[in-house]
Image (cartoon, rainbow, N blue to C red; front, side):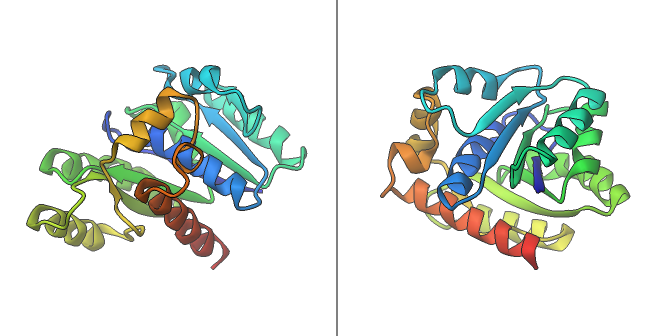
Length: 207
């Protein structure tokens, strides 16, 4: 079983949206997926309430002890992938998520404030020597100087996942209906980007 966590100490970066759609895309690719929501805000919990499909599995855990117990239980229950959504703050539960992960994803919008906010998260990940990559989220749909600068800055700090995830209505519309974006509009550009992102992450974990 592999564990992927979405972590950053900046709210509004798209962690929950990416976690939901990535979990669905991984499930469609053949993984047996379980989602864990450790964010007191509960965005994923609200998404799961709107969802009619019983998969992926889901639970809400709000302490480091509960998270570690959940991961241990899931490891013996036949799941192949656990996706963890975390709070936009430095908490003991987020620290436990990082320590328990095979791969950490750090979403960041292409703005100076978001790029600066990645530094504390990066330091926390590096302290545990976990594999990680930045994910540019909510980017312009067309390449721009700002996007290029953001990509170059994150590459200097570490690995940058491909592709950037553009700001598209399909993401929010899918969340509002309890779907992953690959379910909501399977042939759309947003769905294609999420599938590419999962393929990239899967190859990196295997490699």
